[in-house]
Each structure stands twice: as structure tokens, then as C-alpha cells.
Length: 116
Image 1 (cartoon, helix red, strand yellow):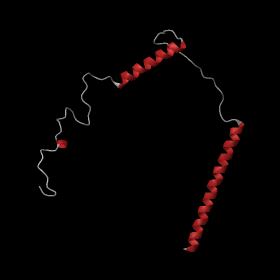
Image 2 (image 1 turned 135 degrees about the vertical axis):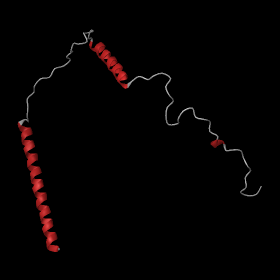
Image 3 (image 1 turned 45 degrees about the horizontal axis):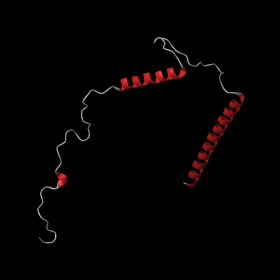
Image 4 (image 1 turned 90 degrees about the horizontal axis):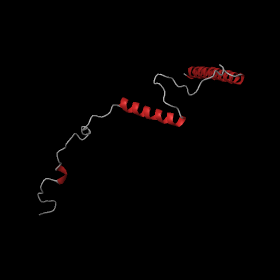
């Protein structure tokens, strides 16, 4: 056998692939029907509710009853006087920044017109 020559080998091992039982990118079909996502979520919600009931010591209740664990109280509306001053200052600064940017842009355009 000369340089670069090679003996005839049987088909390379890498190409001898066993037949696939299922598509390589799809999982095999399940043997039993799977649970739906809604059923899993409901089971988890029921479990968490049972945990909370046990932790809070709440006895069984009728399914149509509403259990209130906390309540809301009205705390007022609008800004405090300090927040109002801060909001007005921010609004004034924003307006001033816009006016300054407009004037700078107008000055730049006038200089470009003079040089052109």
C-alpha cells in the first residue's frame, strides 16, 4: 500500500445509525394522557389554599363564602404640599430645558445659513 492509500474498510461506524423509534426533535408519545395546564394550576391553587388555611387556623367554610383577610382604608388623595412644590419645580425645569433647546437649535440653523 502506498502513501495516501488506504485499505477498503467496511462502512464507517458513524454512518451505521440504528433506526429511530421516534422523531429526534419530538418526545416519544406519552403512554398515558397528560394533565392539562389548567388542571395543574387548579391543583396547585387548592394545595396552597389548604396550606394557608392550616397556617392561619381557619376552619372549613362554605364554598360560596368570601373570607376577608385584610381591609383597605382611605388615606387621602393628591400630593402633599412638599410633593406639589417638587412637581411644580420639575415641570418648570422641563419647560426651561425645552425652551433652551429650541433657542440653541434656532441659533445653530442661523449660523448654518450664514456660512452657506
